[in-house]
Image 1 (cartoon, rainbow, N blue to C red):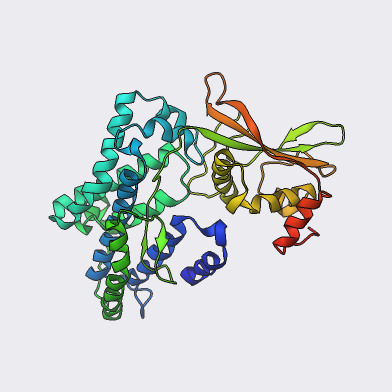
Image 2 (tube, rainbow, N blue to C red; image 1 turned 90 degrees about the vertical axis):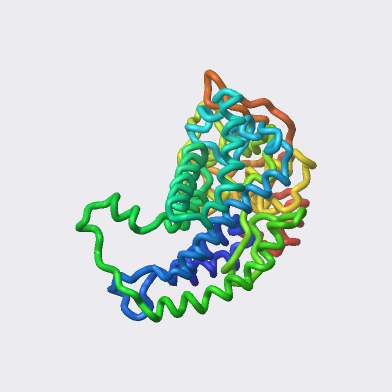
Length: 384
């Protein structure tokens, strides 16, 4: 039921549910069906071997997809300089990100080498002995915990830990917990049979995934089947060298421009970066992508949702405002709204330093004809 509900969200969510971890949650959730008893829900059953092997295949694809897209996508991953930028320019830094950014250059380069080892080479250890596989599973988990500490990457890393747990043998877990927590497990034929029937389907659906991993034109976070059962993954195929941020401003009745503060993305320079992982502020993520578009060519492009968002704010729409940290226009809607781009970097006296770059969207009002035409062209409601 949980899988079907989330599948319905992803199916209609468009840009707002287009992140790679949405597909990963669906694939992991469906695979988890074969770890539960199908006919006797109160029984403690042995995990079918086929399901364990499929979880290893998922773990390997997560690592290989992320590792290969890096060395193919950006030269800084091969010259070992990517981490000198990543912690500052990632979508939503947390309050530990400045610490990671300030590490010595040699340590950051070593971090890139460790990243390549874990993502490109270590997955082959899953084919080794149980002792080698156990060590690999522990390293995978520690690697994900490091990523969790270094930034707010939604529930991506927390979700990735789940198949890595299944890379570690049960006898290791038995030694780590009290004996009274070690129940007796029994085999469950219906679950085992279902996992055997599911395995060839995964193998078939993995053919385009394997071809994609081997391709020079590798795509990341793509799905090749309508139910998102087997997908290809990847992260940070390119790393920004600067951090453009869109600052949204509204004009008050007394002629003062006031900034809207988002729940987590950088805004006020003296506000400490927040910690939200594993929670996911989708608006904060999408406006990070929009800032790169605004920096690159100044067009709206795929970020037409931002114009709709401005339209909502011009009317003090309650639901749109609920996505923000506050409303500087609680008494009356702003007379106009504009979007300006600033260059952000970690500061010394404050958490951030920023420098004005340019205005992405000039001041518009709710009566601006071009704005109304744009709203009508998308069949959006003119009456919030």
